[in-house]
Length: 406
Image (cartoon, rainbow, N blue to C red):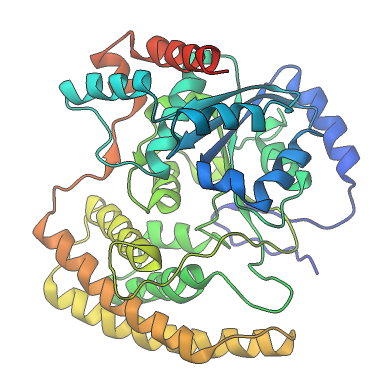
């Protein structure tokens, strides 16, 4: 059941279930005549072998208002890139597959490395950054949307609702963030948001006091969602994190660059499911263990940049406060799930809380030992200032790869 709740910090656009997809699509087609809309799909090659992406492409083939689709392809060799081009060939919109591991793209990476501006590690952040660079080079879109390629419950209405607030010329928004309930047919999901981010933000407010930034993050129903849309004029100055703090990093960039009235969150669907990451307690460099550490560091860095002073004693207090709050929230989630006929493994959930508590301390230790560490990839404005031809060469390299290996 939809609600009317507004938190007072950012606008929440609800799905009140009274408007059809056809009506939304008709209006978006009219908007798109003057405000072109492009979609970025960061993808691993392995996702082409699953069932989710097939359905996503089926749905996108029925979207008439998209001007361009940019697929960033990671972890693919030449044969797999050729297959990827065939895989996406049925898309009726203008589209391109950017082969991030091609010799041309690697040569461009070496060119950036020579001037100290290359992304430091591969991954989703670098993939998204490269796709944004290509879109900036095209210079013909007003709205950029992004979503993952592993959404099992994908429906084209999700995309329509995501881009509508930015495509509508009467709306003031520069960024839209998607949200939804993380449930499948029998289980309550979204562990990192429920068991780490929500209790961590409450704990930080208790330990360091009121901060506008904390209130801002707490305003989002699902801050770790991978679905967001941006007006393209803000893309050249957008700092993209290279680690697993991408979603929190983009929200922090919106906080840095935009007024709260320019940011909204929009309800995309009644349910959402995608590929689930393993907890990976035995390896801090993988799975939700790595993700939780990177998210904590992203929040700590932003608070420090706004003047918060962190000490080892503060992090110890934060860990204890977080742990108690997380267990209390776990009880609330359990009761909510039980009432709605969903399941939660309380033992596994408590093990997750214990791991996240340890990773709060680990993230704090890393932050204190490396306060100048910057996980951000340089902005495209900076790259353009250092190498004015780079964006043009990036677009040409992607086009040449597409022609040569078709």
